[in-house]
Image (cartoon, rainbow, N blue to C red; front, side, top):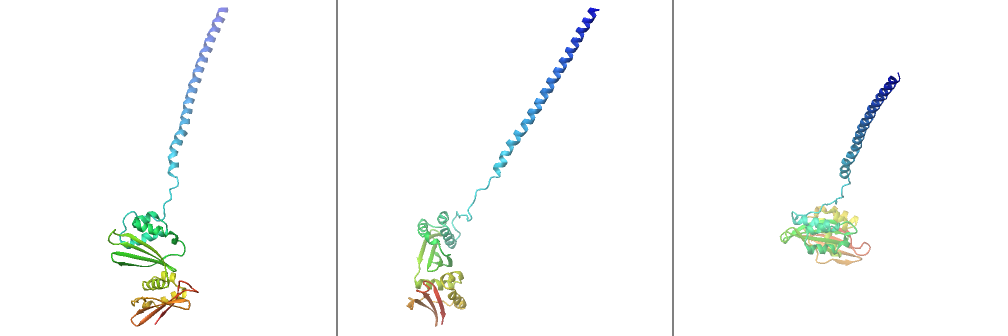
Length: 252
């Protein structure tokens, strides 16, 4: 009886040990599977973070650009060169000056940068003469003349002039602006009443007016008399109360 009991006990112990061994193996396998899944889960965000970096770089703010691109080729014609050169002068655009003018003209223009400030410059006319195109801008008692060559160097500005105007020159620029129908330039050189008088005489602006050799000064004004056949155009330039402006225009 004792032997059977012991043998039975040993068998029970062996059975318990076997069951325990199987249970231990099952736990290890489950633990390994969980670890693999955790590793897989951990990699996914890392991959997402890596791919999102270029998206951030592509949405960076663009680099600001200039409002007026500078031409890099020779202008199509001399008058275009004049216009582009003047606009570059007004805006102190060194590359624009160089693209449209010679070194000498660029130096002349930059030396007059101080005169870009103040009242607005108004284009009065562009005219061709002796292989060049001359464009003129005016404001009260001042003008700027830009000359571009049609020949050599082709379509490049070769001369820039700023001038302070005296009474005869003011009258001449006024009459020229009136003849070309440059209303803004007329207004820049004259009082409101004188500009209105000139506009009222627009029917005569193509009569072929001849400039006087001099103007007569009296009572605080200069009077410049232009002629066209038997007709006269008397332009009064103020010298005291309204200095350096056209104050009246009379047709006779």
